[in-house]
Amino acid sequence: MPLTPLRLGYVPLIDAAPLIVARELGFAAEEGLEFRLLRLGAWAQARDMLGAGLIEAAHMLVPMPVAQALGLGPALPDLDLVMFLSQGGQAVAVSAALAARMREQGHDFDFRDARKAALALHCAAPGRLRVGVPFHFSTQLELIRHWLGACGFSPALEVVTVPPPLMAESMAAGEVDAFCVGEPWASSAVDRGLAALLLPGTAIWAAPPEKGLVLRRDFTEAEPQVTGALMRAIWRAGRWLDEPENRDTAAEILSRREYLDLPAELAERGLTGRLQVTPSGEIRHVPGFVAFHAGAANFPWKSLAAFFAQRIAQRHGLEPGPAMEKAMAHFRTDLYRRHLRAAGAALPGASARLEGALAQDREVAAEKGQMILRADAFFNGTIFEPPFAG
Amino acid sequence: MDKRLSIVVIEPDPERAAPIVDGLREIGDHDIRIISEETGLARHIAECRPDIVLIDLANPSRDVLEELALASGPTERPVAMFVDRSDEHLTRAAVEAGISAYVVDGLRPDRIKPVLDAAIARFHMFQRMRAELAATRAALEERKVIDRAKAVLMKARGIDEEAAYALLRKTAMDQGKRVAEIAQQLVLAAGLLSCR
Image (tube, rainbow over the protein chains, first blue to last red):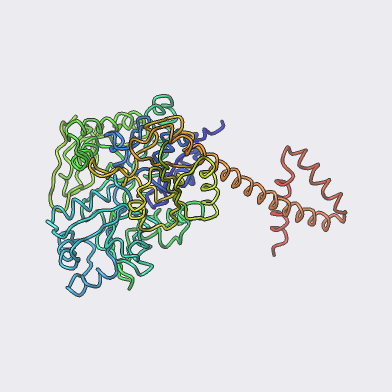
């Protein structure tokens, strides 16, 4: 039987791995799909091409479909997030100059303690701190604001958008003092001697949802079979990726010229959680730096839609209540249950929960039997309660 | 009469920027500027205060413009507004051509359309040129492979070039494949066999 072609857009980052692996290892073909992967240059491009029907699905920053739901983007057909692709994978980096000052003042770059890192940054930062993030609606931006906000960071904070490939350049040009970006861009800046890594995203929030698989709602309705096949292929690729022994192979595949086009060694750092934090070669090991499957990482909790919606609404002068409700309708736990149940995905009883409540991995009741939820605590103990749990 | 429009084209490659600017000049006397630097984009845009910004759909700097479009508050002059709120059809045509436009809030659609139409025409030209270049390269590559395959046959079977090509063509027809494919397979197999 001929394979059904499907166009998928991705931005070259290590967390595009589920799409690339699904194609390269045949998970897509097993579901009768032929993935045509399009490497994109901008997040806005992913959104616009999806809206115009030039791609059927996109690897997208989790807060982007939330912002679309709140009317903060161009007028496009409804976009829905059907599953998360990854958690974590981000790193906070500071400029070489700032790193040197922090070092002089005794900071040890342990790459773990968020409160200590904020304090060191506070003491070393000039009157203001300019931080680059990849997009205005991104997990990176929320991590930075949450972290420095919770630490009572007092220098004036400016968060600006910088395209990931230009992060290192704009640091070198003195336009930002720090940045938070997905791998391999943080490691790439360290390699060029321009930055030192201060924290992984997971030190601020243990399981920060980073990328999602986003489709047009009308496509999920017109093509339920293809939607299900796509979700299963990606889900199985994530399961393969979360077998630790597969991460080196994944780095090899991702680094090929047609995908990320960089040395495999660079992609490997984020994928294996062994990161070089300073140009002089100090290595830090971060278990669970990026997750693609384990601990129900793919389940698109409606409470996370509400979490991002509340924060975005507050910054854009929108009513948080209605904003949270609107956003929750775009995280399709119903499609996740319908299409992944038969594949064997563990399904939680509820579709929303308290966010940040798990200090450790915890076994909970699933639709069938038990399942393990990954620890998701914020470093400062923040707990977010969605408007209604259902 | 309408005032001149201030149009900014963000394009790092001068060879691509020039034809876009030419195309825009043809439609009227507008103030057109090119920004080619990648860093400091927000500052450059703020200085130019453009009515329309044109940029490649895939340019990473688009994500910086997105922020500018959102940041413009009610008191300041909005830097940019998404064009598709005025004309859905036009936006789709632009996305398909690989172009993205940001337009100042309140600019009349009849002033936007000619600018976008001109830009779309130029971007289609780029796409065609890119496709032609790729096709030329592929054809050259195929010819090289066919030449190598002919050489392999001539040596192995002691035939002349014409006979070698005829043999390739006949095999291709029998197999329902292209000559270049058969030639590729032959060259690959010959390479394997000659390895010690």
